[in-house]
Image 1: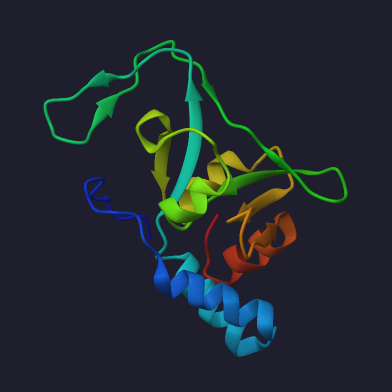
Image 2: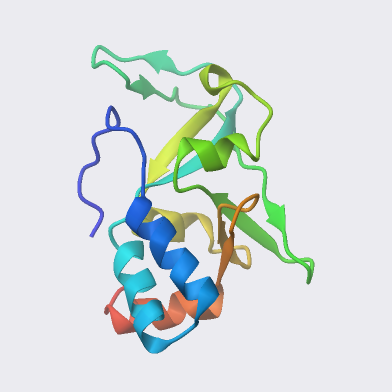
Length: 151
């Protein structure tokens, strides 16, 4: 599901944005399936704070995080006090959430399967928390994973 990603390719997910908008407008089996299908293809941006500057790589656009670097993630709280991992479909959505210039915003580019490794100890994740957002709870994740036979 999570194939190698070209980090030099802009993170844009118009089909995911459309699927979210359709699901929010009308929650049906068809719109849920469309969302779930896109979820398996998506590349999200996850903003992170690093305790030290990554080392530039010989490959353009890549950096290496040094051993011992602490990675911090600012979680988003929901109305029930649960912490959610904020992920973004594109840079325009991320800019609504952070005041930092793009050049100072460190991000990971993650597929759905990678996102799952970050949500084990929280309530799920929220896509585009400052725009037309969608919360994906742990129970939703369980359903999706069973449907697609994922661990």
